[in-house]
Length: 169
Image (cartoon, rainbow, N blue to C red; front, side, top):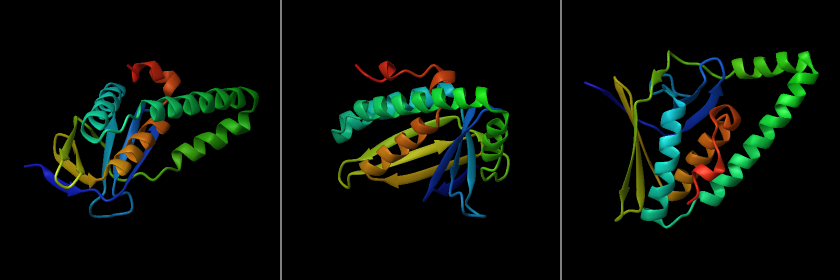
């Protein structure tokens, strides 16, 4: 039987060593913290699905927001690469910053992300599941957009070949 956890907060960062996003539900909680690994494939699938979902169910068109986030991310990565090439002390500082991210128990591979809409209450339920755990979070459209932005901002656009053209129609 899967453990069911309600998420109140999320944090996310990219782990270059794993080449995955690490998504943490309830990062400050000792009892309800859940760490997931998000693969590139699942990330791309979810972002595309979330865009269609928000447009169809909520009437929000996040394409412009996604394009803006990707442009900022690519620009930041390009600047970061030029700084890394010019200074070895910057390399060390950046690695320490990445390694200092809070780490809980071993992260589980996120296998599925479902988005459900309750038209009566205007609530979106996000369901994240792995082999042994399911995390859910109820949120409004604004919180869903914030979650989506958070993931896109942390994804390595250049390394993962993410293009803003992938999300437009």
